[in-house]
Length: 380
Image (cartoon, rainbow, N blue to C red):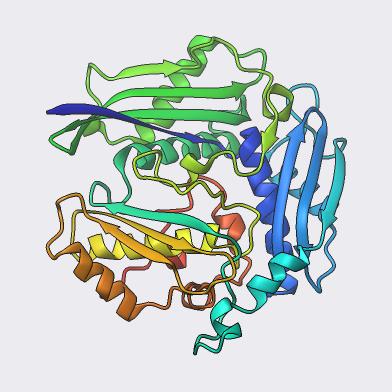
């Protein structure tokens, strides 16, 4: 049986990703000076303006406006007529401290308050987090999102290295993979939309994107004469970034995770310190699922961890191997419970999450990057 599955990725200049990068840059700046900082930073981008809001409790002093302008500059935005200019854009900051009501439950868990032998913060919110892995690619990610991220990263690389010198920062990629009996067979369709300078001929752009982006990163054995290519199908993409569309932190949660291939609990990552289980427990769930597959206990694995606000221990752990497991799923869950401390403090310590590492995660997926702690392979 043959099926098609599609995932998308976006470049770091996409308006939503610009906001994610600013929020994670603010988070890292606080963690650099105060590893216990509580940060929930949200960014909004519109025509010529950036708004940073949220709740931050920290002993550190941080120049948020400077961080905003530096982040925009790093991405490559410096033209207010086509996108946004880091030098001239307005920056509004509206930040308050974390709610005292939330801090009550997070600083000391319900278990600690009631005399149970668990010394940990409580979960920063209720929620359900999913992790996933499969053996389709070398980094145990699904093939469609794996290829989409490689293409969007390549789009940025050819721009920043002047390999294609007329590209601008905004861009999107979509990849459709054809599966046969659950195994990736070929790339069915590739869609690339990239911002460019006004004087560029469309045929030149299409030729350059195919030769210098697609053919450089997509394995040739996955491409054939029937593969479809849609490169800037609207014909023109000059106005981009926050001038072309508003941006908001946390709107690219499917791009950030598994490209729709696995379930998602709904919580975004960027701008949140690791006391927020939306982020830390999602990283841990990926770590667990990846190691189930890496240890050959299953070819596919999805893990859900659920929390109640103020409570340290998960209220539930769910394991699904889609009929590919070598041992029963309840046995995998037992091993996880025996081997890992899944309280917020346990996860933070195990994955070493109080360091300023989050700008590394913002773009091209939070999973599949081998230098991040939750991607390490261990013996289960």
